[in-house]
Length: 220
Image 1 (cartoon, one colour):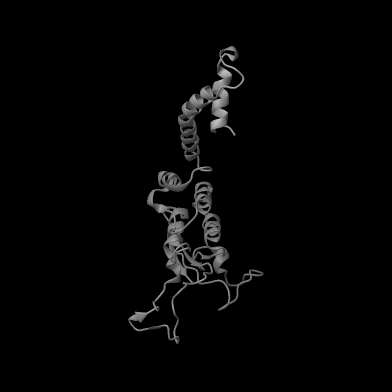
Image 2 (tube, helix red, strand yellow; image 1 turned 90 degrees about the vertical axis):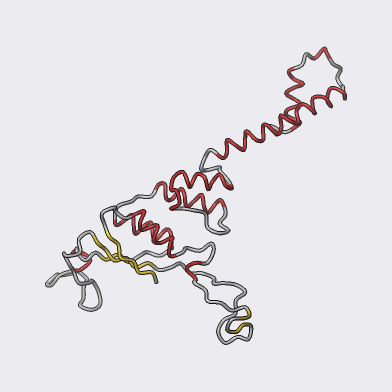
């Protein structure tokens, strides 16, 4: 294997004149192995450093540094999140379209797994209109009231992704816990470690929306 002790010693032997030593020289091999040990460590360090300079191969805290270089505090590793998942989120954010309605919709769908509902009061295709034929709008069941007094504003409804809940905590009606004692607690499922939090959704919208637009958010 390239860079291991056998490879390094073999390269050193190949660089020596063949007539200087016999076909078997334990003392020579011991000396070259001693020299080669530090080179194996150095080769391993160089290989590691090269890997950490690229998003596709970076690991551990170096991946966090790459994320910080691109996004600052806007994107951090979730509690217990593996490198592979964090790397995918960074790649998605780097190459994501932004500042359009389609970008907001696609970005939120990628984050939560569910297509969001986006309503623009000043967009006719969202509100419909009287006498509109074949528009698919119906009073009280589809569309919405338009308002030209809300330019560059939209209402976004996002559905949280499903969660497995919290382990080891008793529920209502069980004898494992009581008020102020036992294994019972209020839990906000949107803040469970490793899950998509409400803050993640807000951050995604802030990153994807045009700078001069306003989004009213509802998370369900």
